[in-house]
Length: 164
Picture 1 (cartoon, rainbow, N blue to C red):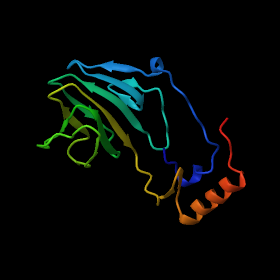
Picture 2 (picture 1 turned 90 degrees about the vertical axis):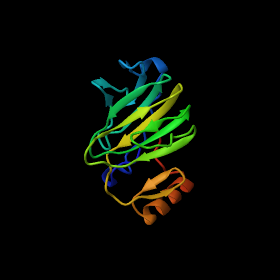
Picture 3 (picture 1 turned 30 degrees about the vertical axis):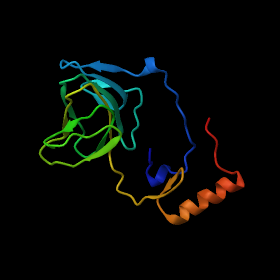
């Protein structure tokens, strides 16, 4: 997860979750939503991150399933289909397996309607944009090329902070 410039050099963190630590929501339409981060219909996910307010949901739709998933209005979002295929919104062609689809920011609605003709599994990923420049190289995400060069030099010198 990208961090705002003010937190870029904070100590790294890692959190491992067992499957039973991820809250689930069974919808009236028969879908199962595993709420990894963020929240869906009042079900809070296992991870809550204030900087970008990420939404990370593992969605399993049954054959013939249809769900409308609300997203925060200011978030950028994408859907990654990893089994089956899904039709998003008014799109005529379904999103195929192993395909990432970026969602447009529609000022009229704040979410996505997902339909599946066959059993389908997908990830819904969204986050509040930071509106800061992004420079990226390998695992490093900073705001400028100079910061990337410094991170690489720190890594090579063995002076990066270690996760607690």
